[in-house]
Amino acid sequence: MGFLEIDKVTKIYPNGTKAVHETSLSIQEGELMVFVGPSGCGKSTLLRMVAGLEDISQGDISLDGKLMNRIDPSERDVAMVFQNYALYPHMNVYNNLAYGLKNRGIDKATIKEKVHETAELLQIS
Image 1: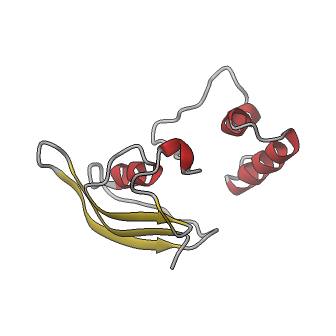
Image 2: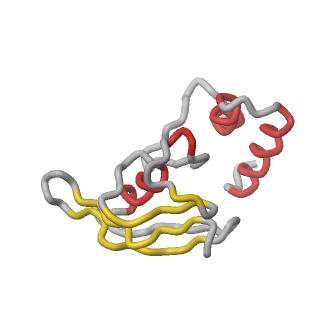
Image 3: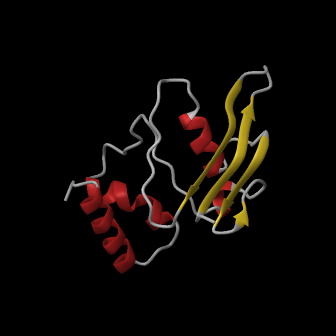
């Protein structure tokens, strides 16, 4: 079992459009996963379901062994990066990366460590 389990997840919108069809995958903790595909193929919809921003029509999403289908987005400890940059232009790179952590009440030392790790990963340090 993976850290993130997506099991036969389907999204059908009220107008009948099937955006995601029985998608299953397992992602291990610390593993990097990338979704690539043409516009409209369901990438963002799947990510929005994982984050809890979109209801799941069928199937299950589990995070660290816990079923997430009915868990509020604020309780999932999941972050999402949008295709269109959601940066705050009045903030520098550090403050943009630290913003969400500060809002969650994370201590300054941990924020500094996490921002540094993220900057290294993104090769922007």
